[in-house]
Length: 231
Image 1 (cartoon, rainbow, N blue to C red):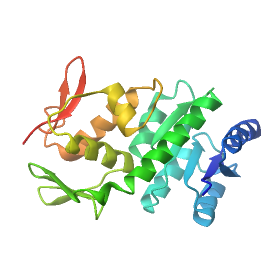
Image 2: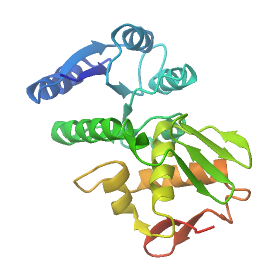
Image 3: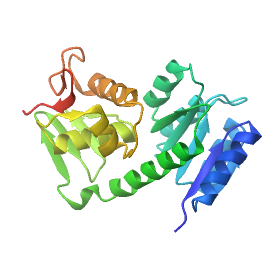
Image 4: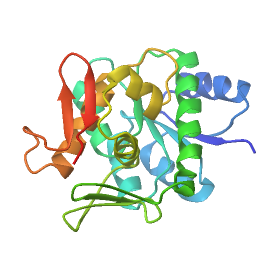
């Protein structure tokens, strides 16, 4: 079944470039040129993934992303950001975006990221085929309910934060480099921006650790990467 991708950008040349490359790879596309239209398209077309420019007229891409997650719409989102807009990248990830691509971008890389995220989303649907409950100390992940609890309290995670924590909890005690996490959680088969891993780890710590600066769950292994401590 063909996957449907919503492309949202107010620059028509970018819309044409992205849709052409996606359709050449077998995707179906729909488009929007502003934030409100993007929300309408998501609600009416139910795309499999959204490519979303941050700088949109009226309602910007960050607000669109925030509203989607607020409505518990878990469709994967890739943000298109300006080269020097580091704060937008971080804020977008905090709001629940799955990835970002910096303008100007390679259409080939963008399509590769779309494919990677959709592969991961498809595999996420089968997570419950194994154990439906993971636990480390007082941290409990219920895969059937797609819920994480810490000390009996529900922890609100974005889809990517949930997947990253699931991966670490499945491999308690094992150290993973940033590149390995990009490969396993983001499914990148090319060199990606490892900052995205650091941002997600930082956000996870803020949500599950008593003291994020002295974490008791997710440990930094200096010079290599991260691991979930054995409890």
